[in-house]
Length: 128
Image (cartoon, rainbow, N blue to C red):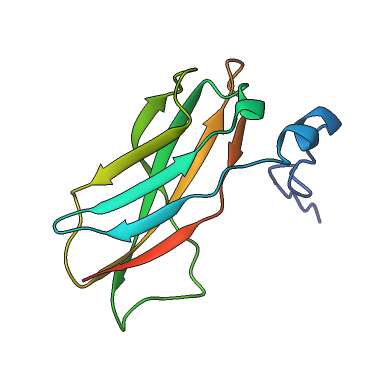
């Protein structure tokens, strides 16, 4: 008998290089709050964090209140990108593509010129 088995060869998630770990230490905090017809996201980049070149804003629609699967993996989609301005420390983005009664999750991807990105903490908001 002959058994053939195929696989992707991936044994575990790749470990970041030591230099990447050093860069991941200071990821700015993302804050989300409900406005009239949108979700306002705000964050700041301190002077020491000048290696950021652009920021991708990602959103996951978790579903209706009371019907959210807390154990399900989140499917984030990029909704926009922001180029980092060296003179600006405070940033904001208003997401108006939201529906009342739904719960959303947001995160930021801070990327340098080489395309190496760090992810922020995920923030969840119940849009009422």
